[in-house]
Image (cartoon, rainbow, N blue to C red; front, side):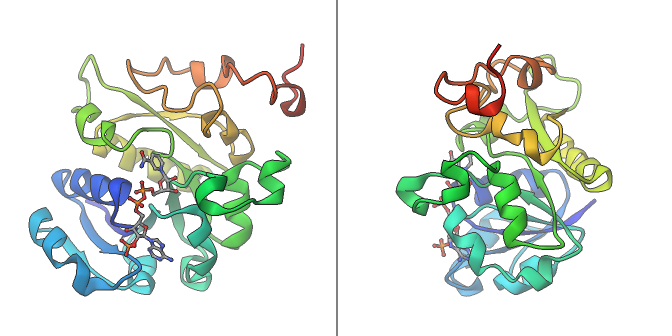
Length: 223
Ligand SMILES: NC(=O)c1ccc[n+]([C@@H]2O[C@H](COP(=O)([O-])OP(=O)(O)OC[C@H]3O[C@@H](n4cnc5c(N)ncnc54)[C@H](OP(=O)(O)O)[C@@H]3O)[C@@H](O)[C@H]2O)c1
C-alpha cells in the first residue's frame, strides 16, 4: 500500500483516484476550490480516500500525482514538492495553457519544463498519454493478456521505479520510455500519444515515434 496525494480532481485526477483506492492505496485528493467541494467524490471513493488542501496533498504520503492544467503548475507549492516523487500527467495545450516559448520552440519536453517550475521535485511522466475514459476501461489485473502498457519517463531511477510500481498497481504495464528529455514522444502531436489500445508494444514508444513531419528535423529524427 502506498499513500499518495492527488492534486486535481477532474477527469484524470478522479479516474486515477478510483484506481488507487481500488488497488488499496490511501489517497488525499485536492482541487483549486478546497476540500469541502470534494465531499461527494470522497464519499463515492470510499475507505482510503480523503480530501485535503493543495498544500496538504503535496506533502501527503510517498508521492504526489499532478492532474491539473499545465498553466496551474506555477501556482503549486514548489517547496512542499521539493525532494518528492511527482507523477505528472500534464500536457501542453496552448489553447488552454497559453503560449509557452520553450515548448513552442521544442527546446524542452513538457516534463522538462515542469521540472523548471518545481525545482527539487523528481518529475516522472505517466498517464499523460491516455484518454481519460480509457483509464477505467483499460485497467486490467497483472498478467491479463489484454493489459495495456503505460509509458513512464523519468530521470531518477528511484522515482521512476516507485511510479512504475504505482502504474502496475493501477492496472497497466509500466513501459520504460527513457528520461524526461525523451518524453516528447508521448506528448500530444507525437506518434505514440494515446497509443494505448491495443496494448503498447514495449519498444514502440522508443523506436517508432512516427513523429509528425514538421517536428522530425528539429527533434533529430531526420534520416
Ligand atoms: N482529459 C484527458 O483525456 C487527459 C488525458 C491525458 C492527460 N491529460 C492532462 O491531465 C491534466 C488534467 O486534465 P483533466 O482532463 O483531468 O482536467 P480537468 O478535468 O479540467 O480537471 C482539472 C483539475 O485541476 C484542478 N486545478 C486547476 N487549477 C488548479 C490549481 N491551481 N490548484 C489545484 N488544482 C487545480 C481543477 O480544480 P477545480 O475542479 O477546483 O477547478 C480540476 O480538479 C491536464 O494537464 C491534461 O492536459 C488529460
